[in-house]
Length: 240
Image (spheres, rainbow, N blue to C red):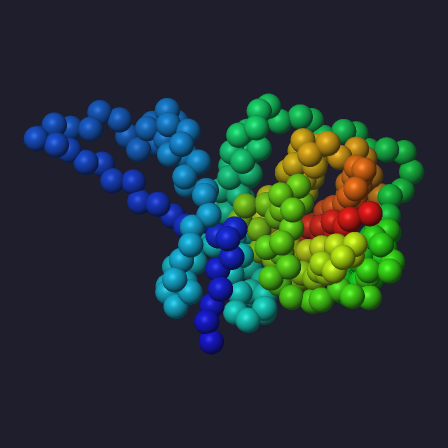
């Protein structure tokens, strides 16, 4: 049974300090990265790997699973939090200054998704196309088919995914965990959607959430405290 490492996976890159003809390298690796954004970005670029060797080193995998089974839960650590936050901010900064997340709108947003485990129920709760919900297919591979607007954060671990792509029925439902805090997750998803010209609105009750729309698409992002100090994120994206 082969392991799969999805395109989100981030593999470590060894940076070697080389010397030529007895000369010393004047800069430390960290200093060189700060001066070379291409090298810095390369640390977070997706890499293709041999699936037969994928399980030999998964320390920095964003999403890894065997035959559509999610990984066991793990607890957040300061190191994991910092690495995930830095990777997310690097990605956002590639397209300019990061805009501020808006203050919450008055009144409640959609119902909480915290106690829902069925993808169809989650899609229905946020207002996705009702005539498409019955066609949802549960498979973690749907998390790789999210549009860039709604992609999961770097170092996120997918727990559930479903989708459909049949004619006008195009829906994605993904639940994942991230070691960063709730506000960091909200910022990441808000900036991605805002830059894609979605009209975004934030709500803080009954749980933190973002709703976005543009002419042909809509999305909902729900964020809450998760197990083991992680943050749980639900993303539903659909074609109107």
